[in-house]
Image (cartoon, rainbow, N blue to C red; front, side):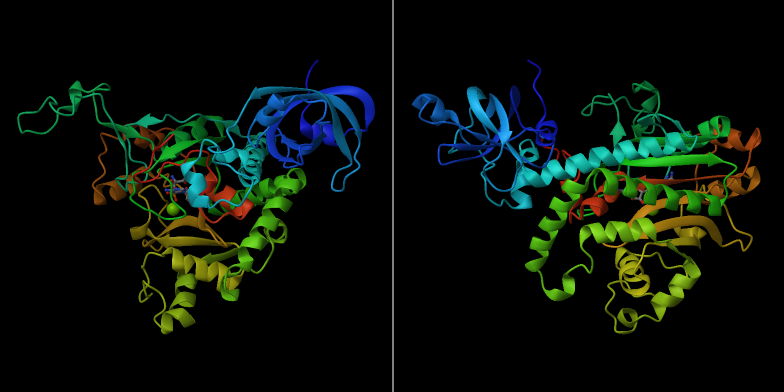
Length: 477
Ligand code: 4AD
Ligand code: MG
C-alpha cells in the first residue's frame, strides 16, 4: 500500500479504511500515544497504540527519534489539538534511536548546540519549519522570473575573474602545494595548473550573466557563490546562494522597480503557502523575545512584519541624502556609532544601514547613487563624475539584502575605470567585447538568498537558515 504523508492525512476525513504512514517519533507518552512526524508539515499525527497488545520488546524500541511504519485506521480524535488520529493496528520499527545517546531530545536546545548537530537538527520543529520556508522561497524565486519573461542562466562556478574586485576568493588549483612549478622569478607558474591559468570559485555570476542578458534579454542566476572574507558575523557565510537577475535595456529605476516587485512577490508567496510554519516561527520568536530587554525586542510580530514589507513601498533615498541624515543623527552626534560619519564619501557600515532602516525610515530603504570610490568597477558613472548608478536595498534586522547597479555600457569610460583600479584588460577582454559589439544600457542586482530566508523566518543567525553552513574555521558535515 502506498503510504500517505502526514500533511495529507491531517486534512483527510476520518474513515475506517486502513492507512499506512512512515515517520519519526517526536514523543511517546504513557506507553500509548506516539506523536509521529515525517517532515511534510510542522504538525504531528497522534497514533494511539493498545500497549497490552504490543510485545514488550517492541515497546522498548519506541523512543524519540525512532523511525516507524504505522498501519491503522484514521479515526476522529478523542484528544484536543487534532481532528484525526490513528488507531494503530500494526507497527514496524525501521530503526531505533537510543534514548540515552540520541542528541535531539524533546526539550529546548540552544542554536549553538544544534549547529554542532547540523545533520540531525532538521528533526526539530524550528529547523523543519525554516527549511520548508527556504524551499518555498526558492520555488517562488523561479516562479517569479518565469512569469516575468526571464531565462534561468547557469553561471560557471570556477572562474578566472574577480567580479567584485575585492580579492576575497577561494583559489582552485591542482598544483602540488609543497612543490609547485615555478617561473624564473620564483612565482608559481600557473600555466602548468589544471586550467592553464589562475582560477577561483566565483564570488558572483554577474559578469557572465551580463554576456547572456545581451543576447537573451532577461536572465537570472540562482546558485552558490563563495567569499573568503574573514567575517565572523551573523550575516556572512563563506558559501551562500545568490540570485542575480540581469536585464538588457533596463536603467537603474527599472532595476529598482524590479527588485522591489520581486522581493514583495516572493514574500507574498510564502505568506500564502507557509502559514503554519510562519505561525510556528512567529511564536518561537515571541517566546525568545520575552527573554530580551524591552529595547531590543522587535516592534512587530513576524507575520505582521512580512505583511508590512509585502504591502508597502520601499523608501528610495540617494546616498547623499542618507549621509546628511546620518551626519545629523543622534547616535552620530552622541558618538554612539563605532564608525562616526564625518564626510561625504564614507562607506556605510551595517550600524548606519540599520539606523536608517530601523530608526529613521522604519521601512525597507533603497539607497542609490553611491560614490564611485566605494563601489565596484562595473557600475555606470553618473554625469557628476563622482557617483555611480548603484543601489543597495536595506532591510530591518538584516541590513543590506540586495546590491546592484546599472552597468557601465560605454567602452571608453569602462576602460578608464579599469585602468584606474589596475584591472587587466587582457583578463576581461570578453567583458569589454560586450561594449564593442551591440552595447546597450543594462542593469542587474544580487540578492543574498540566506539573508532573505533570515528575514522571512525571523531567525537571528545566517548559520541557521542554510542546511550546512560554511564559515571561517568551520566546514563540518
Ligand atoms: O553586494 P554584493 O557583493 O553584489 C554583487 O556580488 C553583485 N555582483 C551583484 C549583482 O549586481 N549581480 O552581493 C550581493 C548580495 C548582498 O547584498 C548580500 O545580500 C549577499 O549578496 N551577500 C552575502 N550573503 C551572505 N554571506 C556573504 N558573505 C555575503 N556577501 C554578500
Ligand atoms: Mg554589496
